[in-house]
Image (cartoon, rainbow, N blue to C red; front, top):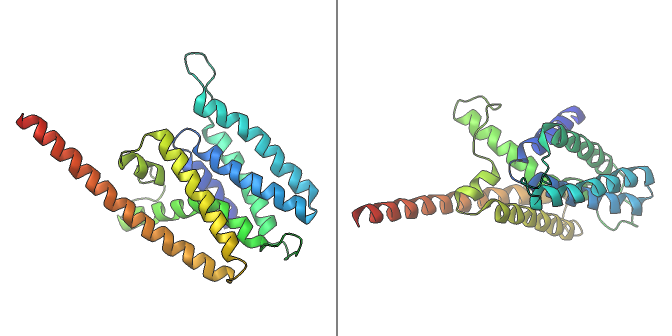
Length: 223
């Protein structure tokens, strides 16, 4: 189970790296939460790894998003970067997930572990299921990831990136609040339901956007 979790998170971070700043932004949130959590739990070695990773991701995010290709100041993560970050996050997440409850932390460690990884993990599962349902190999690339959906809905890449990172942050904050009242299994079920409803709404919005574009092109031709 641990091996599948590691491979799943590594691939999720690799596949979510589709627009500037998205993978590094989501990873920054996760490493920041992990770093603070491990500090409060007294796991200083893991806190150092988390915060050191955050220290690398922050300047990378800046040059990835705001860098200028003409000035040779723009950098990209690539497969090596996203797979390495995925490996670090999987190790940190599993360590935090299996940590016993500590009243000093005041939250369930398991909820803190999986909440920042909801967006990439849920997205890769959805994409694989869609590909299998369409009788295609789950490993063949397509444009069905969450960032592709936001772009298809009419957002520009930077707005899509900020929106997805904001949604991930909201998921984490809501889960932390619910963890004081609900069992973790119920929280995961609620997350899945919210994710399915959100994707249904997004698909409907994409259809309306495409219909509006088609009508605009038709009206332009008639004129």
